[in-house]
Image 1: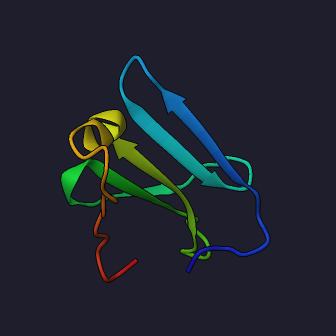
Image 2: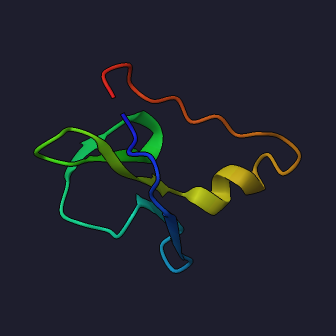
Image 3: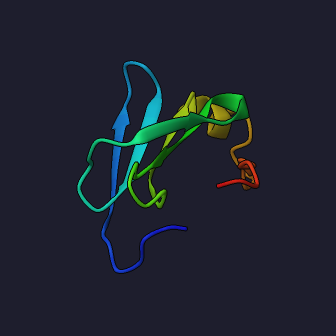
Length: 77
């Protein structure tokens, strides 16, 4: 479950084409790699989602500039 009432913080690293999203301030977390270059970051104590990392972020949207790009996540998250 995603924590509510937290600020969404987004950082894009153009050099490696990775988007980092954190719910609140970034903090140590367990990384659960999904398929297709998406990493879900979980609080190790509560298992709440604290962030999402998307590899090849710009490329995903450059390939589909007029469309919504869906990134499926595992049902366990």
